[in-house]
Amino acid sequence: MLASIPTFALVGVDSREVTVEVDVRRGLPAFTLVGLPDAAVREARERVRAALLNSSLDFPLQRLTANLAPASMRKAGPSFDLALALGVLAASGQVPFEAVSGTAVCGELSLSGALRPFRGALATALGARAAGYERLIVPVENASEAALADGLEVLPVGSLQRLADLLHGRWRPEPARPRPAGNDTGPHAPDLADVRGQADAKRALEIAAAGGHNLLMVGPPGAGKTMVARRLPGILPPPSFDEALEITRIQGVAGLGDGRLAAERPFRAPHHTISPSGLVGGGSYPRPGEITLAHRGVLFLDEVAEFSRAALEALRQPLEDGFAEITRGQRSLTFPARTMLVAACNPCPCARPAGDCRCNDVDRLRYSRRLSGPLLDRIDLVCQAAAPPAAELVDRHGEALERSSVIRERVISARERQCHRLGGSGAYCNADMDGRLTRRHGALGDEAVERLLGSVEQGGLTGRGHDRVLRLARTIADLAGRPCISPTHLEEALGYRLASPVGIAA
Image (cartoon, rainbow, N blue to C red):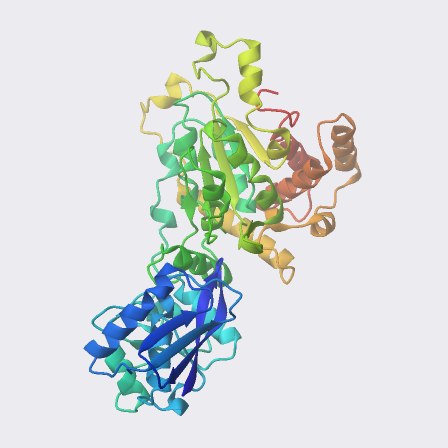
């Protein structure tokens, strides 16, 4: 007999339907698995055999052939175990065919027959819903995450024996419900009020958070660059439902989520020894990189000049397009990468105060060129974070500085103006605007046009830089609650542009 059981395989951060076809016929006992399975999938034969026998079910001593279709797609991971076991049960007549109609399954099996969780439950559920299935059977640990996909009945099952009871109508679990979203920890993140001085860096951080812009802070060690950057999550607005669903799906695929809808934006800070594939994604079976794990959040590169040139250059296309396209084994995968890049570096290799600097001009030039012009042209704000004066470091009068919660309210108000203005365009914030939206919502008065035209003619702005300045000025106007961009807003935006996109020492 032949049975077909639908399941889903992870492809990047999405899922693709796979049909597990199991044929049971008379012949010498054998279990053949075809359809480009990897080692983990091939080992499923032993897990399925032991799980069936230890669940008081029969493993047919006949010739079994299982095909994972489409055969041209490589299959990886143990999440096909449950579909293979159910296919054997259906093909051998141990469960009725009609009971599995319109139902997809996914899960890993233990030798005892218990179901173990798998990565990417939300991506699997979204794929099952898109494919038109009514039900999805998953392990108990994955049920709450899969239930985030509306319009799909998710049934949690703890063991293979319970699955047989369900299909025979002897037992039925309560459909899974999403767990309450985690607490929004934005207000409880490290507070900007802890940072003494650095008013310029705080202002740049607020503008970057309000519009989703890229930020580079340049200053000596100990000036507070890292301290300021790590307080960015405390002023970022909470993600919308659609953004939270994207974040949760990516975290589930990477094995980082807790099964609940994300309540805060991700903040990723990889070490400078990371490889290009670790930063943008890759591998023999491509996995998301750090820029994808930071999707709709922040990618923080501390000591950015110490990262390898290849890794930094790999960021150029994802920062511009909002996605990373990875090609491996004659197939291409697209990973979302709409993230804020926040970077920090020293002004020179010795990193000493200006009076004690021992670097000559050649040393500074070589160091500055570690960041290429095209990469720097994708940075919206460049902030010089000088060491704060001693008087600002010593709190003699218990002066209360502005807290992150106050700044966060201004950021949220600015984002709400952007959502209202950009509704229906697919853009969530000013940094997401393309050239057409930038021209529509970044209109300038005559005086501001002359000032911007002068910057372009003097060679200080590229075509890309022109659009980025307009988006930045639009964000500054949103923070001020102004419907139009004024010359003052444009001047501040131009002040944050690097004088020339040839290096940080320019």
